Image 1 (cartoon, helix red, strand yellow):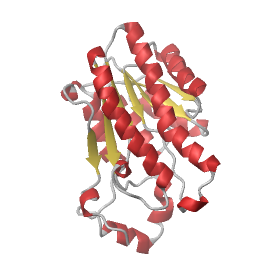
Image 2 (image 1 turned 45 degrees about the vertical axis):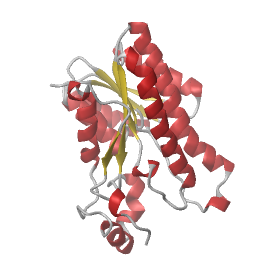
Image 3 (image 1 turned 180 degrees about the vertical axis):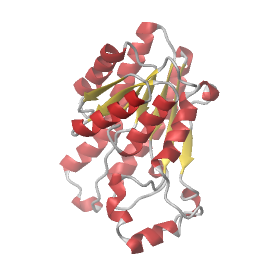
Length: 255
């Protein structure tokens, strides 16, 4: 088991991609800090699934849009499982609106969750590692839209572009501490956030025509990449983005 003896914190792990990541890392031997924002019952289900795999797990609610919430998540996770070795910044939101209709509330929600949250959770995690004089790994779940324009989702694209630059910058700053940081950029993945798309045959057909592999990704596709980056097999990789999109990015055109 590649991650035996490690503890991983996966933000936004009560459903979708985050759940798949948490359960895959547990299958690889890690104990897991499950994080949720507003659905503790879903997080409890994930926690139970992890415990069935023979791993330890705790479920912690947090508002990652606040610095206090980010710091408390790390401190509560350490209190619950003794340490944290791996951080997966997965929690994210998006809002669909034409640029001229974007409200300050929706802008702040997207930027706070997708960029401010990962920034300060990562900061608290790094301080925890420094206190232990230990190395560690940080994996951000970004998006193909860190590079690929996505009309009507400008705040979302800006947040993911910021996450990409944060990753590159921190790869230089954290390397002397034995800490690596990388992005994973999923394309179109079958998750609850895409329910409307999955139920619209015309839109789904149009999207699939842009994906050379002719299918949506599965949460497990993303989780497999996280498992690799979390393992010692990726120790010489830092500051990069691993794109998981079936070829979408280089074959995309707006319909």
